[in-house]
Structure formats: C-alpha cells, structure tokens
Image (tube, rainbow, N blue to C red; front, side, top):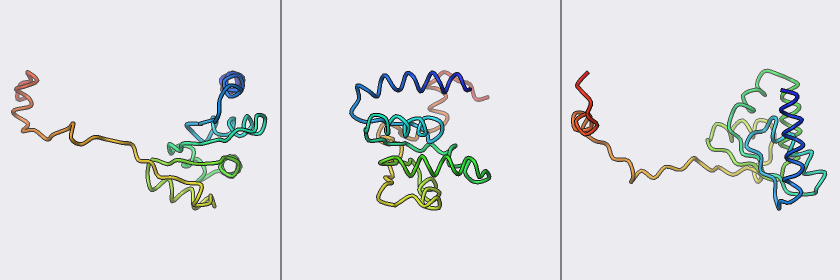
Length: 127
C-alpha cells in the first residue's frame, strides 16, 4: 500500500499541475493526497464520498483525525446518499460544503416485465 500511495501521489502531482480543479473519489487516501496537492498548487478540491472512509471514522481516533483534516481542507463534498450526509454533519462538516448527488438512473429505460415472458425472451427455462 505505501508504494501505491507514493506513486499515486507522484502521478497526481503531474496531472494536477495541468488541471483547474482536483476531484478525489474517496476521502482516504485520495482526498488526503488531494489536500496536499491543493495546498501545493492552490487549486480547489472536490471530494466525492463513497462511504468506506466515513465508516472508518466510527471506531478509530486516527482515521477520524485524517477524515476531519481532509474534509476540513477540501472546498466541496458530494455524497451519493443521505446517510453519508448525516455522517458528514456528525463530523462537523459545514452544511454549505456538502451537496447531495444521488447516482442517476433513468427509470424509463427499465420496465418491469412478466417473469415468464422475460425467461422466454432470454431463452431461459423455468428452473
């Protein structure tokens, strides 16, 4: 893991230099690395919360410290469910820094079909 983080950091440095914003897809480790790069290049940082990082904060003082530091030093946070927003608020993240952006599904593309019709259409037997 240390080599992954080191190479990720080095590659991110190069990419961030040419970018307008930094967008990390997790709080730890990418968000934490994003905070370091944000400070180096003075670029805005968005973090998308996926859940695992927040779950780590529940039982560990060390993880909670890294999470709070990272979330405090980013510019904007997107969360794809309301439970993540609740946990972010519990970590004292300002509400104006958080945006709820649910994963999108176009329900018009998916229509409920009769199971036997669907099995026949797909060439599946009753079993």
